[in-house]
Image 1 (cartoon, rainbow, N blue to C red):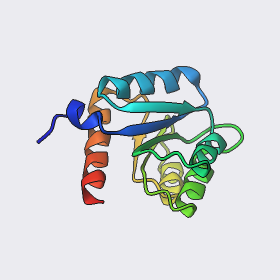
Image 2 (cartoon, rainbow, N blue to C red):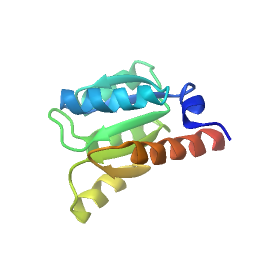
Image 3 (cartoon, helix red, strand yellow):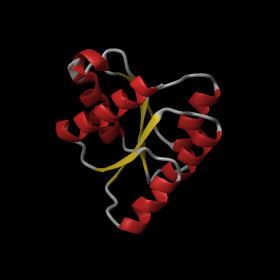
Length: 133
């Protein structure tokens, strides 16, 4: 079995978060696993970048953002036929809010802050989806 670092070098990820510090931290963590990353500030930018033809294996999607939140963006991406692994990432912990986010089309949800253990779990899920395609 390939290590996450070896597998990661084949992956691309889009980090969607209006907080620049969170976005940069998540990009750096993914880069440490060899994942090539791109960051955007809100859900509309995430939808637009896909509309113009860019594709990613993984999308880390924040829930609360201006212009277009993560729930709306996830629904739009799924409606566009985007099959990327979408992981909701938020500091929200209320079950009803998480459920609403999951129902938008997430593959998983992780509470902030992400750490290497959570990131390993995310990359395992991406690897499973990648191999299944």
